[in-house]
Image 1: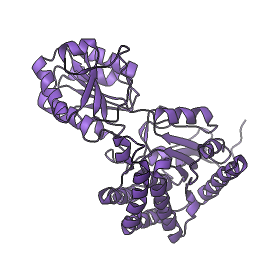
Image 2: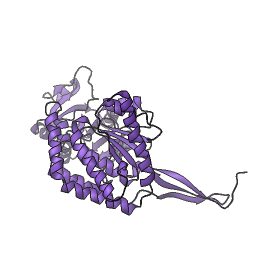
Image 3: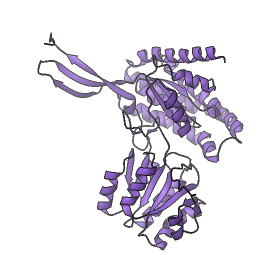
Image 4: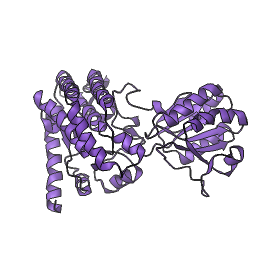
Length: 421
């Protein structure tokens, strides 16, 4: 495509989204839920076609992606069924629109209320995982928003059929299918052009690697909610239940290491004995997790590898690898997290209530957990149906973003002739 064609294509997508958003924001919840039920039904009916499209993506990416990214790209019958169930769960959620957040009467007799409304038009950018096509579309549509979806080029065939399934379900229900659009042109210049469509698009949500998100922030003239790295920590205190701690650490790192809520750094209290540390680390060793640590840590745990001269604990592995560091109690653990965390999810394993209170007060991340796996940081687990991502921002939305996070509000004033004096 020429630059002029790219500009026209981007503007067309944005204009269609704006037009559709004006229609769907007034659609009753019953009709939105009916459309979502049609999507879930169509996903199950088109399983074979979805798998065929996904097989093309996998074949094209076999030698280009890491095992973790290939896992994210892969669809199978179980994951398709999970997509369908996720859509049904979103349909079953209470309507997030027209909720009265507050209501009162002013001194001049005017009744004032604050009521939830859709954000409008959302540009959602994501990488590798084709199931996010459905999650993003369903969450945006349920909350009355139009969405322009842009998946990674490696998942284009999968995303195209999934987006088409969603659009066909909207058409079948009598709803403007442009409420959900997929960017089918893989040229990065299209993304750049869409990031300038501030006249039509209200919000950009980039979900992916740090390089992608920084590029979006630098280029966008539209507000951006960032979903940065998941450098998630677990701190094991001397008061931890060791048997439980070993299970949680193993789950957080190995249950699905390619996800953003997997543990990337394990912090161990220096008061733990060598045998205690062995009990915690042995399940990781059994799963062939490669561990890295600084000089102080390797004095106590000599079989882990040198993390490097710079002791760079900023790394997100997304693989069967993790950083390990020995710290002197909860205060040093919190200091480490403050310096190296991406503000995604941190967990404390401890029975001491004072340690728990200190950790909760001093760790500033979107999810903070006590005696639980970081893998629980998820929109579905939180009862949100699904998520468009996990925001590491603080303004407007934080943590897993479900339908409530895709709404804003407007003030409604009801008077009987009041004037400003």
